[in-house]
Length: 267
Length: 219
Image (cartoon, rainbow over all chains, first blue to last red; front, top):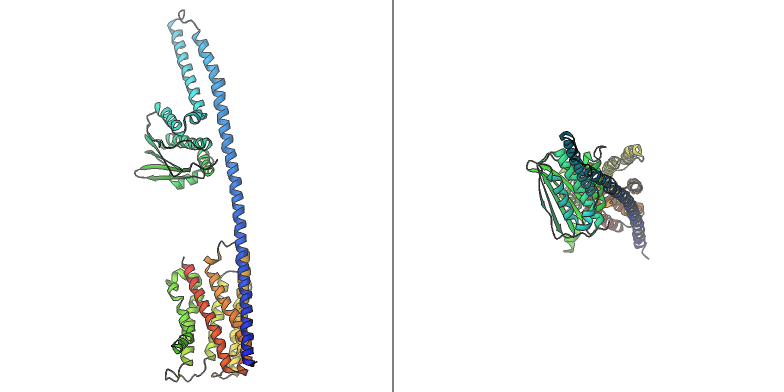
């Protein structure tokens, strides 16, 4: 064999071997990195699942506690108040003088108000309306009850095509709207509020618009980490649990809170 | 036709360096690849000179410098300096001071070599090139080992990964060439010339990888 050709083929073999080694090394490096990323993703998923479980447990226990308080108020405090009312009605007023009659009347009025309040609070805490009549009816009922005794004007336009698919999820949506509306009344000092919903492609979109002094997304992000921002933290927890999204916008035309929830997601 | 293709292939070291050019600009966006940018610019000039020297007969010029061996060695020193600078700038805490000193030692060896060798020497001293490619190969291996430890979501997005991969292919191919170059040249010069035909595709791949690195650094 020609020594030059022999040498040339030897060099080519060396180059090929070195290239092969390098490519194998590179492949091993890439595979190792992919494995690492997969491992990280698995850990991330596990962490997320654990976080969701914790949030779910917190939300559920909060809901259970609300029910317990609502039932205690309705069945015990409500019953005592109703019984007091009966006893109160049993008092003969004919023999009383005008001053005592006035006091009796005032007491009677206060008792009526207390019974009404206890009923209102227990209905608010309990999700019986939601369970019986659905989310739309529960929101309408809630809005009517809070605007009845205030100067707040409300407009509610809810998509009638939406029917409850998961009651637990609807309770979470309802609680978020309750919390947001309460916040708007308490902190934003709004005079007008509008709630609209749209149900499309298995996604329920809510828009809460008001004319008060609202929050921007960055303010919401900042406040939900503060101690006093417990309500906002709960909203965020429920959003995580529902795998949805919330967006606060604030501009010269008004304030808006948009909530997006995938409704076919199992809780 | 085949002659034209041969000529194009012979000038591969020059035109291949034009591949990264569209991705280098604007220079502000490729700041992290500054040493590599300088390498592309300087190498383009050097390879242009090298090719003009070796083709001066066909251009009907006489440059009084009939061998491009010296320029190849200057290119080798510049490459080691700029790529050492690049590897230092990657902030991988591995032999940083050695990387700073090695190019100077290498440059002084080349200087000593040319003290005893004629400037118009006919053949390339492969030992100097073996040292250079060996050092660059070590830099590359060290880079990959540090990459193993890092938490990178995707290597393909790293400009440094493309620079080092291109350089690795280049040095992996060139290392055996320089290793046997002296032996081959003693046996037969045309065979030694054939070795450069293997070197050139490796250089083209290196330049394509540099283009990708510049593209990634701008993203």
